[in-house]
Image (tube, rainbow, N blue to C red; front, side, top):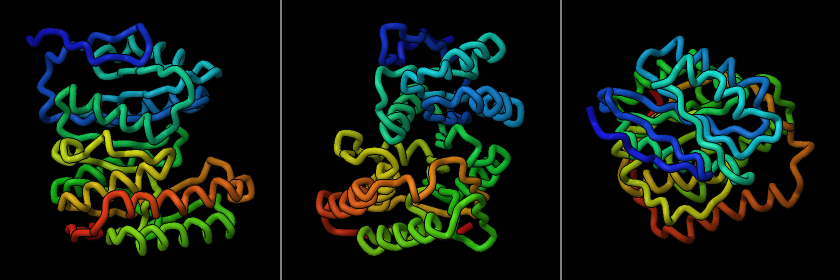
Length: 268
């Protein structure tokens, strides 16, 4: 049995995790949360019941609605498979996922999956990601492949998302169809290839920067169809500042990393 490893928490209540099980064959599902009390318990339970080889890490940005309390109430039921890190302040989805990547590396996990907490990403589609990762270094669930579906989006949101993804592909040159869907699976080797210190983007733009780093590193990137159910705010609530910032951030990624290189990318 290995010695306990202090994996570190953003607050003073660090969790000691004993890695007594072989992690080389296990997957860590990273779920960033902020005010997801109504969803997180159901999602965690579904994941841990459906997939015996998965562990779950919830990275909560100090949700005032008690999201972390719901997760803690499940720790006794899943003491070796459920982890929670509570961060001070609202750091955002992107930094929460990067925090989870570091945890996956420290824990010796073979694979890491990121997904949202609100059931916009379906837990039953995880086997599709795991099957595809056998032949890739990163797999993403794309909303724009044949067989994919998008529910509860108006035409303006769909229009903006499609053009934002086309714009990102034009600027960054990664041959993928969906830069902004946070339903992804990564091999450990892909996480090890990331330069965390160079990632300056925030929010969902982090997804594009992570993909671009892996693209430049020559990692194999694959896509699979997905069913996406929108449970977030629509385009009408996005400010002009947010839209402008998203477009400028993609340009900033291109300028910072320089010349593009080819990577192997294909739908599976």
